[in-house]
Length: 119
Image 1 (cartoon, rainbow, N blue to C red):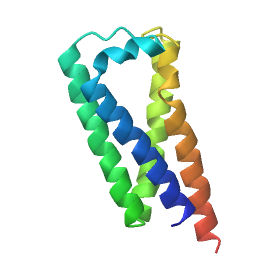
Image 2: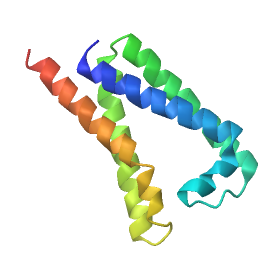
Image 3: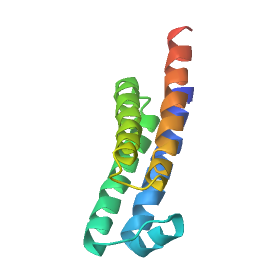
Image 4: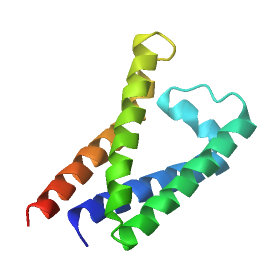
């Protein structure tokens, strides 16, 4: 498995587990400083995140380089938009914490893609 695929596997596992956790236990968001309002919509969001996690796992299994490249832009954009929301005072600073795994795995994927292209 390439480095880029391994990073997608890790990110996919994070998203799948996190999404399923949110689907089943939306009120546990209070542990990281969020007020879980709209229980149904949190569960729907958790389901969507879990499905995205599944896509990452399948892409990793298939060594789908095009998916890896596109996902880097998506994950970095996600992190940037969370940061902007905090700067605009639309959310508390702890919202940025949700983007940390996305940012780190996007960098990891980028490094893996670059290393693969130089071989």
